[in-house]
Image (cartoon, rainbow, N blue to C red; front, side, top):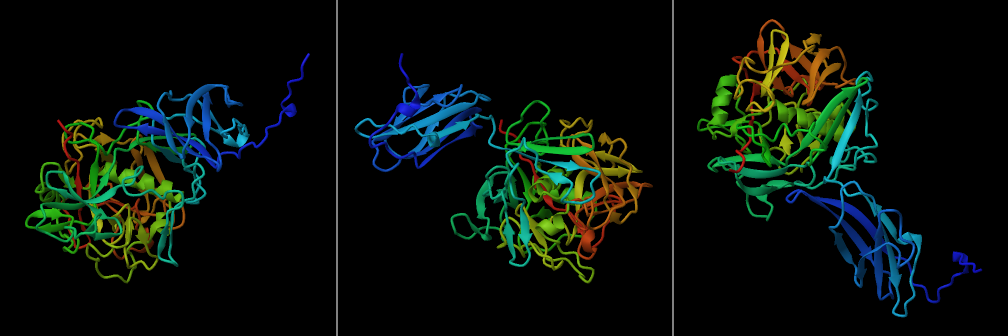
Length: 509
């Protein structure tokens, strides 16, 4: 009889454990495949390391499990022979030239390959009035332990928290100059739009350029639902099942597209076209019909801003801030009651992707876009309040279930939203919203500037109204990403409102 207890073992000149040993899942969207990337850094004085793997537990010696790789240099090593949803256990065993191995538990890492690059989201308790108290990061998302993003008004710097992604990474858009044909001519330096990413001068102020300054967004799949009074929002680069959809990524022919585009600047009227150009004058005193005509003059893929894009923006902002009060998180916008006019496009070209102030005069910038709230009302296609019935259209085609192709000004053929008649005090703060599969719509205005959504809502249930969003230069804290005006007809115009562009190029043939 023999005692083979591990306590009876000794290794002479045993090497040190790995300096670094980690594994992560990587989704390759182009080939719809997953892989595991293992980062390994050898201890000094070793000849190499054996990496073994198993699906039943960590290998405890250099002969257990399945050999993945015998490495002799630091680096990132790829395991492509993996299956989605299976847990893989990796152990590294550094060894010397004399055959001594380190079998320390410090050399272990595990990973579950996932068919996605990210899965983010938040939960919102609708009955809770505290903007920060009602929003949480659940355990099933990759951002469960993230620190929220917020503007530091004292330093003038934006703190990304856990959301420090570069433009083009995860769901973050990229600033670019987009031709009328819907093709990127060049990308802009996100910290100085007057320059291209290579440092040369951009066309961001050039009205003769055949296109516009836009933010290029990737394909973003979402799932939204409500259960037991809790609103749930999830987003990913990949649909997790057939209940997910990418509402913003459809062209006018109902085809999915890889990118959609939102405006960097408020619309300017240049030679009969609604443009997004730095330094050009804001276009106001126009009707919805005027604005649509001017937007379409850029080309068939262009339109004014649309509801689906706004709803996505709202959810992403709430998710990043972990709050429904976005003014204190991102900036107040130009809204002070003493303001007498709007600021022109381009005042925040060197402010980065996110910037804001609490002075209520300087404007706000989120996702690379200027004055998403405050400064000027932004007319938004796809959202009608028809005599108290909210009607919506999420896609320019009929993928959303609407029965009419293209947007219109009366809601004919749009989707009718049940139990969403605007109520409360018109001109008050939003206190309740209706959950739909495509996002949330405001219903009741009985809140305050520090509760619930903390943004305002105007409505008139006695006529057909075409939605404006964001608010304008002198309405104080009512402005914000949720602020909606459902009280004005499509034919109304004045100096406090206009429109900005959107573009959804046709899918490749």
